Image (cartoon, rainbow, N blue to C red; front, side, top):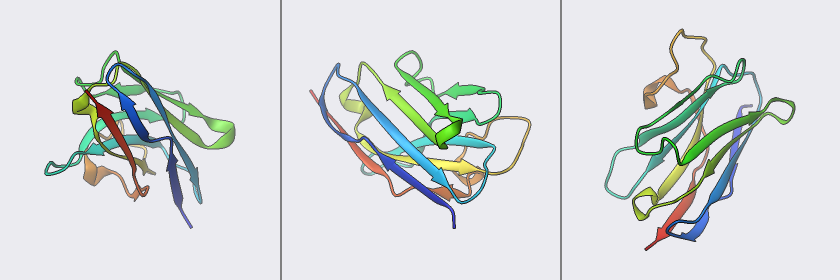
Length: 124
């Protein structure tokens, strides 16, 4: 049974940092991604990383502030979030894509498995 378990969300002041973790189990994946969904908005792509090779891609809105990384030995993906802004407030979801496509998947429909989400709130 596939499981993606997120942790690390919370409340932080603007300019602060948080690190999200996503522990994956149940099968192997090609790519892991982070998405977020703010109230009243659609779920949007944040970052993605290949398990093999570590190729990364970021949304423009987080580039230079967020870093996605992986720990292959522990099947865990991280999202280090620095210089947080109030507009980063959202529920953050970990997602997994088992398919080995040429390009990194950036769309919600390209991911087959999802975590339960973790709330990140940035106060001004």
